[in-house]
Length: 116
Length: 116
Image 1 (cartoon, rainbow over the protein chains, first blue to last red):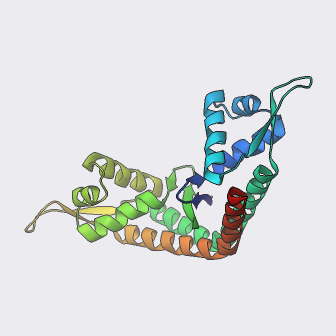
Image 2: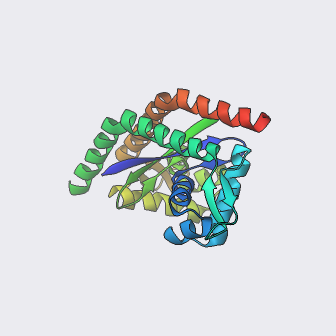
Image 3: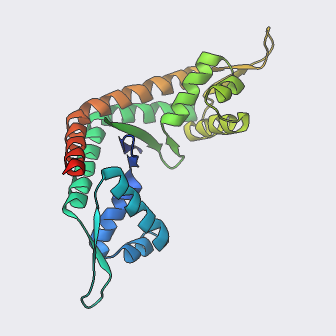
């Protein structure tokens, strides 16, 4: 099935796409950047770089470290990070809904020609 | 200004995004893969690989070579290639229109927090 993926260009600072948003969602679920990296089969360094890049793009932190506690060194999303994820997913849903019929048509054409 | 870019995932074959579509449009305008590559500051090899990848993704050629003639070795889009470009641009317009207000809101939030 054809589907749409979106990137939001917050020019000139950079771009937010499905990989970065999934990373934020995984950090929220796993409670740390390193656990999120492992869950996504990504090095800690790569996960950290993406989090840092999002902060630069948005001009503010998207993840806050939590020190102390039983496991120490955890991380959670900032209020803005949570908002960014929610906004992105809402924009994605709107875009998908708007183009659904056109995607089906493209898919049908491609398949028909493939078979033809 | 925040803007949206889209990728169409024709799974499992692969993905069509703004770079590939711009390449097709440039081939149509320039009349050859090599001239399109130069215009987009891309090697001939890279341009050719992208054209080949699109053909695999769609199961049919998107570019046809034209041999002979004054300049020989030119290329044009196939009927399907033209249709793919038109479909992609139409889908892009629908998606942009659908999310315009949400993008503005995200942009305003990001800017407000940056300034704040």
